[in-house]
Image (cartoon, rainbow over all chains, first blue to last red; front, side, top):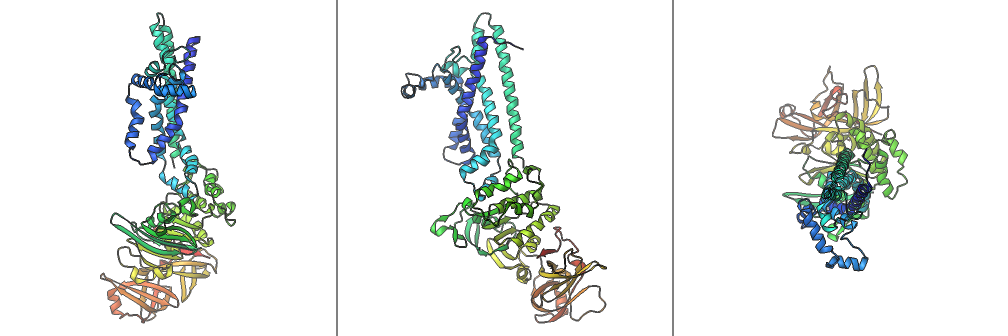
Length: 230
Length: 370
């Protein structure tokens, strides 16, 4: 069993914190957008779908740069956020979380949308005849039926967050204990003479985490199929 | 409580224009696939907005397009049992049953334990829908709809998805429901056997329009409804009382308004009412009472209506007191016997054609009526 050095443990814990906040913070938005895409027809739906999926093909470094331009302390939005709410994203772990959230947003939306679309539309009609209004149906029908999808999306997004590099280093920089997540720590170790051993250990750790994430998300997808089975 | 329905709707090149009443008890909306049954049901349930129309339950208006009234489905208090049951897969049978009950203004006459025992659900309560058979799912769906204290009930081909065995399993429950319920029940079906078993009244729908309306007994003996592309299978349905059993010969004697009928044993107590369907092709006609004949039933009757079509057949409606029977013979026979309305004849019915034989849908030719 590997024993982690304080720097390594710090990078691991930071990675887990950033990924957790990114996934949980994005989840309500992902659910709302997935509901919109799965249930409604509206003008501009294809455009919204495209925008949601954009992070899948966008170079992360470009996204990081874009965020820097928009949310930097001298940029209009960044200055407004700092001035009015004291929120600063640049050079902060919250910035790393924001960048990770945006980049892994498509994973969440896709999984939730698939789960919502797997639901038999007749169930909603049946619930209506039994007296359930829209919010009632959302909470007692759509949400529980989509829960495994929600879980699958969240786990995939979490695993992907752990690997995020380009956007974080561009937008939030590489600050030990603040924004130096696992990938950044690996990169830093490689830049340091004699750091190969640390890089290897961190890389192995990353692979283990990613593998666990994928297995968990597959398990959640199986649950989804079971729930929708009639 | 009476459901008044007027629906006009059109899509593509198909037009629906139907107006009818559903009094308490079971009324069948009968017609072939594509006649517009589902559209009418969807309009009553509140799933679609018809082009024009008015739907009311006693004095509560549910839909009035002219006055822009459209009560949403969830506030209509109309229970719907779907063909595919539509149980909530993540909830247990018990939770499914209580879903509507929790959300409805409760009718004190609807009690959870009585519905559970009426439908035989007590052993299923903790199961998930995926572990139920088709017939069990239908029963749970029925119970779920009833527990929401509906003021009218729509049954959309509730037996169509079931095989013969399951149909026979759920039919007694539907029969009990039909007798015990005093709310309007609209039973949408294209299966004649189910309709003649369960319904008191019948609405015949074809191409979006109502062709005929009346009691099952009236409609089934109307000769004009036997022709056309959505014809009824010729044969009358009559209501009879079990008189006695001949255990030695395994026969049952039935009394009906206008005569007696000997049929193979029906496992019901004397005094019980049953429905008997007698296919027109099983009724033979004679001008005089034939001696030495195997048929147990030789019933005097008067020809009350006749209808001859282009094909080889002649349909003859027979009056025996208030009861109407129907016989299908060849045109040749009709000419030979010089049959015309008013003629006195004898109807010959072999016992074996009634009740003892199961028809192609597996439903016995008789049904219980208390």
